[in-house]
Image (cartoon, rainbow, N blue to C red; front, side):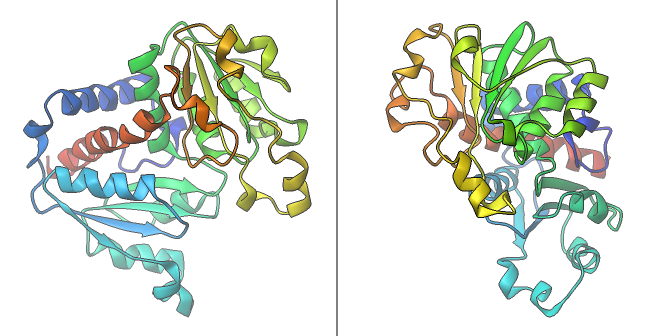
Length: 305
């Protein structure tokens, strides 16, 4: 990998993305060939926010590569509770690990932390900012189901606070993709993200309703309305549950439409969708292991070169 740290999807070129996805495909095809690629390697986990899929799949990824994790553990049991700064925390944990994975509630925190460490640091989500490794596994799943060029994708839900949306939208500018964004007016893409996408030459359309464009989509990417990001709970209650799909919603779509979701879901995808041929969100979550294995393999390979 040409990058010391993975902070944002904006830094990833098409070649960078394809290198990771191709390595992930190799791992999927022959996982046994990668089981001892990095014996003894230690991955430092610094999660200042809750996580299931990201934390567990990174743990599985490094262990399948022959390494292990050192985990800061819950914030309330760490020195953060004593007032330790983020800069000091990452500088300390850097001494225990060969690479770091960090999730933090403050946008820009991963970029700041990376300036204090020499080992690779991977952003596992910085507030409403970026989540580049989620984007890589999203792209891998899209490539497996629909391809990444000549793609029409609908991205629906919380586009204002959704870091998975911001990352994916930027990464898709590397491909021939038309992006439709569906959300309430109050949760539209931030102006700064729209500006960047236009500057990158993206073809984007914004909508408040899904139905008019549903039949044109190859992929429907649904996101949760994120209660924890709203500064005012009344603002959340005004839009909660507004954008939902069920099996009936999908009756009019093309047979090969893929439905994705970064998870966790609340009520935006009914459980009756799970039994349809369109649902690929659990496979999407499972793809976190080979994709994060691929990224760690490439980054640790670069460190040892």
